[in-house]
Image (cartoon, rainbow, N blue to C red; front, side):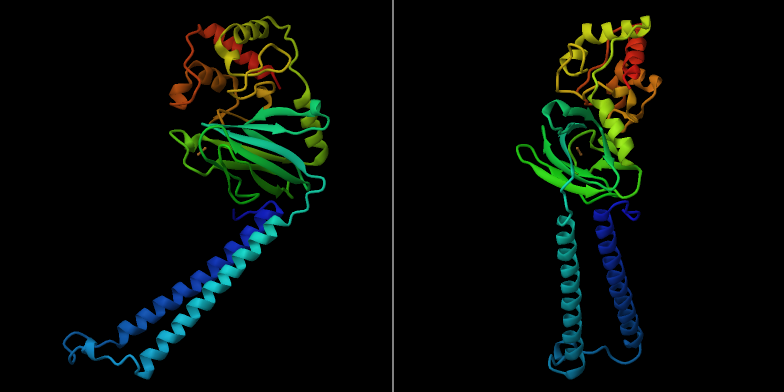
Length: 315
Ligand code: CUA
């Protein structure tokens, strides 16, 4: 959040600076006033303490201090309110003429990501990773499949809720290429902490190449290990939840795996995307993310190794 990489985040960063400076000054002023009051109060054993009940509310000294303190507080809070409203309006003023349109749906505990294309055949679905072109606005439509989640990429924008049965919209623009971590920021169950994702901001040509690759269907493997892996995938319960375009697997209740091998992480930012971690994940997801919808596998390790190799080959 302190290192904004886009125009929206820069607005929020400036608002943060205003709040930090204002609140620091107020904090310091209050501590100094408290210190002075303590220093000027009668010490123990020195004279008699003042009788509080006899203090005259209209005695000029204390009365004036209270009025001044109240006025300063009101002015300070109003200034912060104006700064907040101004930032909020600035956030909504992103021109979105040539925007990239993405739909993100929250699930316990992962993200499905669909890039709207024209024509419809250009549309594709991926999971747990957003790719965006640098310098172009992005409009993300958000909804949820189960409970309320929140999408938050501190380097790029503020938070936005994903609410079942409703559609919310988040707009941002990445101005610096890089990989930015995002995190679900609304408690959504047991594995809320492991509902992360990454936003990869690439130069426009690189983004276009990535999108073109995502639109392609998975190829037919020829290597015997990969052939075995594909048979395992299509012949077991994997296809009841997952899709791999170009095969008979079209289920949508789990992440789309058409290009899973090309992603940076597994299990929504929980594991690195390596053959070993993928093997561990499909062997027993409950050990890594207890409560996740994917059950432990009963298949022999050799089959799972072949399956992991096949999935990793889907770049
Ligand atoms: Cu999804 Cu927290």
